[in-house]
Length: 485
Ligand code: C2O
Ligand code: CU
Ligand code: CU
Image (cartoon, rainbow, N blue to C red; front, side, top):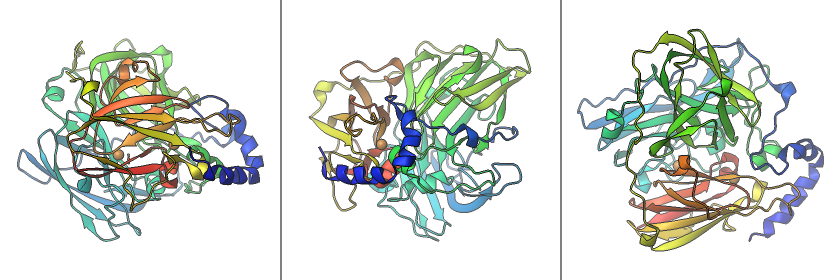
């Protein structure tokens, strides 16, 4: 238990009683916290959903790939006629989709054209620590970082984003993030939609505090420090309330919650259900029928929506049930070229046997605001918190100690993430995980007072991070380091 920080937090909160009372009613005991100032909500005109380009592979060799990424500053037009300062990879906002194959030897040349240092972390990728792009691998302005790695994990939708100490929240918020797809024989042979931008679409969902003059500033309010930054406007692939023309058939959506902190509960209008086929680290064994899906910061899900019962021209809305905000629309626009019968069985996932674990390691997420910590410690670059042996299987027991000021404010959920590894969830408070969490996970939402046991085999050497993926919590120090030797 960490106590020394609590007094400080109390003092800090006391100073801002006024702002606190403004949001306290919204926090309640609901583990999915949110605030929405409706009067600030912006309703711009619709535009088509931007589809990020697929990044060109510069290496002609079939089992090798070379990609060039440049982090740069630029401007975007989120609101008609208004200029917003943004960051992007190879463009003004977000980045291209990097698409690789299992067993491929990949080189990425990352150039930093920003005015400050950055890093590029491959979130969900199983690679050695020195190639993982964490806070130890800073790229100074004007410099290039050139990691190479061999893809050695199943097909999945991963992502990349900066990870500079104390700067991750700001750099991601301003636009530095992109998707990283892995294909393998299973994904290539599966009879599911897989034509990029035709029936297989990326949806990167992020919220911003956008003012009516188009400005997006990374200025943390007390509420942001406590809860993580939650914006007044949600963007999908960098557009506000866009529409997407879809075929009258099955469509695959790859959802990434790329927000700094907000937790969404996605659902479709007309009670349109969908099936989830993949979680963070790849396909589930079986498709799972869902009516909505909760994704916390950094979590991904691949879902299949069947639009075949609609008339051409009909519109279906994607909504966040937590706030009621409408995020985008699907417009059924063309006859489908293909019908897909989603297989009953998608893939095999070898269950890791808990008895093969050499130990159980505990992680307690606790504290508030500037005092958020794991196991009573805040991130220190020169301290390794956990030592592991390569190829060991371990159980990690992650708990969220609900230290919400003696229950006065309720607690908040923290998405726990670790680098360089994919986990399987053993149980949540002793109960088996829901069906859509029985596959590979690298980010696990831990609710207040919950204890979640996960298991993994650590096959990569080096220094890696584990942290809360609410980026304001990560930047405040809710992060630690583990070394695999
Ligand atoms: Cu998505 Cu440590 O990162
Ligand atoms: Cu990561
Ligand atoms: Cu957190």
